[in-house]
Image 1 (spheres, rainbow, N blue to C red):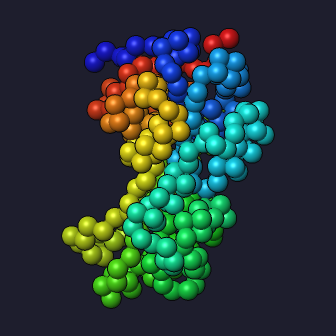
Image 2 (cartoon, rainbow, N blue to C red; image 1 turned 90 degrees about the vertical axis):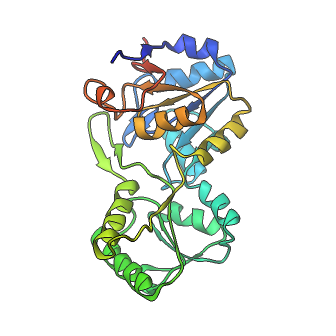
Amino acid sequence: MSRPAQIALRDLYDNYDGLLIDAYGVLVHTSGAFDGAVSFMQSLSDRALPYVVITNDASRLPESCAAKYQRDGLDIRSERIVTSGSLVIDYFEEHNLHGARCLVLGPPDSKRYAERAGGELVDVDHGDFDVLIIGDESGYDFVPTTDKTLTTLFRKLDRGDDFELLLPNPDLIYQRSATSFGFTSGSVANLFENAIRARYPGCDICFERLGKPFAPMFDEAIERLGTRNCAVLGDQLETDIKGANDYGLDSVLVATGLTDLANTLDHSDVRPDFILPSLDEA
């Protein structure tokens, strides 16, 4: 199978009225910005080309993301950032969850999303919840917290309780640095789902996934961007590229991130429209 065509930055600037840009794996990693990211964002500013950063990060509020990007040398305002965590607010409104007791696994900003949505936070030792939200893999003592949460979940299933399982960030892995990787909240959700299947064979309860590749993220981003004549830049086939393809937008796989071009493309049904080797064209 032939490889998708390469695209240059100048083609992105000339052919589109705006860009949707993934954060981790494209602009930044945990330790800083990728080579070329600062000059790329400056070029967008110089050309007055609209953009929105779309990130599956649910561990930081948009203003916290903006502060992190600023520390990395990227001047990106919070109103240009759509996080998967921010989609919790619309989800609560659509499902009449105001006042729901929320057990949130994640750091403080993950919990703030639930509060902004109108949820009432409960601790893992409370022993009950209406909504379980996995905001991140960090911010809690992993084994004791997940064990207590699993026990509460099983008790609720045994009683036949109604509850919601919510996963803002479906990503399984993320880029810690230019050369290192880690598990993220999608993998935590898989642990719970596999545990449910093990104890309750045939049970089809699963987490509601909000971020890329699903439509709510793109709905919000397109509304802010103001045009559908845009390209989506991302580094993961199953989230960034699949989401763009499903939404009918041009997809650009940035080769500096998680996807191993030498091994992955030939074994995936998800194909980007273009490949961008790097943001650094110096």
